[in-house]
Image (tube, rainbow, N blue to C red; front, side, top):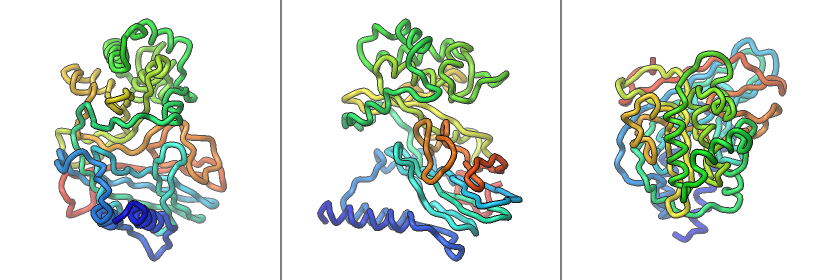
Length: 347
């Protein structure tokens, strides 16, 4: 099959997935359609090998109640990557829903629209996850647009002032992007503590992390990204969830994030500074590699959702809602996982 036919089939599949669904269509199973298209067209699988290091089902529940107006809810959903396969994604809701994509980073969301009353939705999918090592084999150079995007500041990730000053002091003389990134990573792991006390943490504020030397994963990696970008090293912010190593099922309390930097010839290289701080024995593992105990959802900062009326989101991992065009914060949500195919709902 030639490339034009392959692209046509792929576009048809995406168009089917993106069509608004009505009340009588509650569940969507398009993974197998995509798989057939990939096989027929010869398009390579996004993942590195066929080996799967961890297989689990993930459940994302959302509920809005006592609505007084027209509601829109955007729920992020993961996609296939080189180290992650998403299988059997299902959306269970009585409300109209569609799939939308943000124009800058390509993150995908389920957009649910409901009237007065309530909106409930449950999204389930299986995750085939691989451990990641470096080099990744993704050695395509960045485009000019990509390089500009991943060197630019965002609203909370500045690349001047105290952030640039620290970066210059720690890694300004390092000869390569890799050695610059490693010096910054080591310094952050050595000097920033994982601490969610007080105010200011959790926003991914690079200046806060630089000044306080404390924060959660968003703060650790915002500081790294700001410092790397200030030294001319393209870097990006990734969000998802950690899956406990010592459990086979259960609830997940909240998100996790990490970072990647780019080096020509080696592609995107991952790191997880906050987890390395928590367990110093993993410092080498988590620079240039990632475990399989996670699922990636979104990328980027200052994200504009298709059709939103409010301001861009600082980052996107939890559901975002608007009622009559105004942000609505009264949302209930929960997350759960199970390592094997469940025979009953995830607790």
